[in-house]
Length: 123
Image (cartoon, rainbow, N blue to C red; front, top):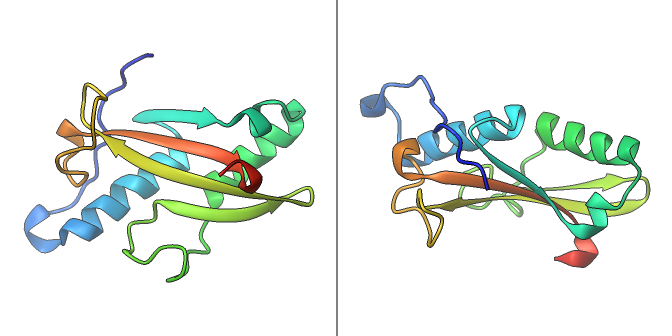
């Protein structure tokens, strides 16, 4: 597995909350797929290339966050329909050596983000 540089978010830490920073880091990663790792479930990976690319594009442009799906306001989960199939995406945060959860997802220096795109049936 390759290591990638941490995501950088231009914000004054003194003027933003921890949730604001986590949300900004998650959004930056989701929109660009840079600064972390993107994983596809078996169900998504076996779709035709055009459908896989469509799923990735939907995730990158996702903006319909709701309190039900995003109760902590961190923009780390979303659901969408793709060719009649319900799909999810989820961002998880790990420590830099990826053996446990990140000690502080608001700090990109100690966090690796993993975004997984999956069929809802696989969840």
